[in-house]
Every structure is written in structure tokens, then in C-alpha cells.
Image (tube, rainbow, N blue to C red):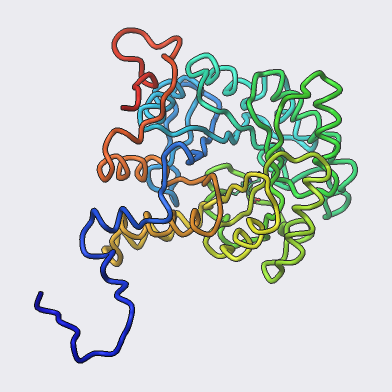
Length: 358
Ligand code: PBG
């Protein structure tokens, strides 16, 4: 050994466990898994539509007929779930398409459950993509009316349930919505349908590109009267506690990177599953800097996703899901693929989601 420590004082050699990739893996505390990624899908009207979102490279608005191909790609990568956002053909003051039995998201849910019954389909429940003014509910002047909006949210959740959704995820930030949604679901016979509540959702500048993708930019004003002030963390714990009390089965902290302290604090205080939403602006920044050659995009992406997991999130909703799943496979091999039973409705050959882990 060249490094003899004879004359040195006693100290601990942390570098021992960092000497090789094998040792680093041995000592690794946090491991990402594609099964923990939730991939957001933007579903739009029309046929044959695959429109890239200008501020989000490789993220597309898809028409219903494009979902089969997309679902098979996701299953093949081992991604466990998707969250759906709809871009309806017609928007109105009551957000009717959100709860129309044949609304865009209801159609997408039915199609995905037909193609890929094992893919967990999450429905985002909010009015902003469906109102003509882009606000999250019924307006009273320029303010969203909390109590009148609750009924629309409940109807939306029940419509998604009828279509076969696996989880509903209210993202509107109206007070009391989890209770109202739980009661409506139970009343309609869906006592077993879980609610994943966006409990700590901040009024964030990082949602900009999403509003291009979902065509949901408010016509005037912003969402500060219902989304949380970025300066607050104790309030996030109150929101989470209230949602759990009202019947949330799991919760979301959103955005992710600027709120790792909120994720970590929530992880210590609450025992429900905690998901983090690595939002559109976080994605756009990394992609833009990567394209400019200013950062190593793969390294930075994996570092960021790992930090979100390390902070305490169990699931990560992220637009990086597909590339990250591909990189994980390169790093750890096919063992990371999830075990799932053969996909119904996929024609010949190996069913896309049927690859067994070894
Ligand atoms: C509301 C909703 C938004 C996002 C998810 N659900 C937009 C908003 O609150 O303005 C943002 C997600 C992202 O930025 O990636 N339906």
C-alpha cells in the first residue's frame, strides 16, 4: 500500500467505500426505479395528433389514437403509472368537459385501461384546462369561488371513476375538496378508489411550460389566492394533515426541486405515500441547459431525481421519466423492468409489459 498512515493522526477513511463503482453501489442509500416514475400525458382532441410542446422538448400533446404506442413504450421501460391532463375541444365557464362522460380525459382513461390494464392511470382533477378563462373553478368576479367549485370537482372525480381510473388526484387547491370528493366517490360506490391529493401545491413560476402544454394559462390574474405562498412550510404540514383527515390516501408536494425541505419534513411527519411533482419548468431548465451544452444533461437529471427520492418522495411525477428509465436500464440492466402480466389487446410478439424481471 502506497498510502501508509504511520505518522498521521487517527481519522476515518470515508473514501474506502468510494473506490470503485461496485463499492459505491454497495454503499448507495438511494436507488431510483422506473416503477416509481409517474409520466404525465397531455391528451387532446382530433386524430393522428402528436404535437411537441414548444417549451418542453420531447413532450407531446397526443390524440387518443396515439396512446397505444405511448403506453407500450412506457410499459417496456417499466414505468408504473401515468397522470392524465386533458385539452378539450370546447372550453366553457363550467368546465363541462372535465366531467362529461365522454370528456377527453374519460376517453383517454377507457383507452388506456383497454390497452394496458396494469398501467396505473391517475386522473388530474382540476377545472383549469376546461374553463374558457383558464381559472381553476367557477369565478365570482375575478376570484375562484371555493364552495361552488367543489361540486364540479366531485363530479369530475366520479366521471373519471366511471371511466375506470385507478387514482384521482385533485390539483385545484380548493379547501375541503378531498372530503367532498371522498363523499361523492363513496356515494357512487367507489369506496376503494384512492385519492392522491396535491396537498402542498405552491403558487409557482415553474408551471409556465405546463400552461403551454395544457393550454391553461389564466386569461387574467394568477393562482395566488388558492395555491400556497412559496415562503411557507409549516402551512404545508397543515394542508397535508387536513387532506389526510379528509380522506387522502397519498399526497403530493409540488414543485419538487425548490421544495425538498417540504418533502423531507412531510416524510418525517406523515406515513402516507408522498409523491413529488418535478414540474414543467424544472424540466424545461434542465433540457435547455443540456441543449446549450452548459450542463451534462444525463448526469444532472439523475442527480436531481435522486435528490427528490433522497428527500423522501416515494413516487416522482416527472417528464424525465422515459429518458431516466432508459438510463437506469443502461446502468443497472434489465432487472429493473417491472414484473407485470401480459398486456391484453397487444397483438403478436412479446407483450410489451410482459417482460419478467430475472
Ligand atoms: C392544474 C395543474 C397544473 C400543473 C399540474 N396540475 C398547473 C397549475 O396549477 O397552474 C402544473 C404541472 C407542471 O408544471 O408540470 N391542473
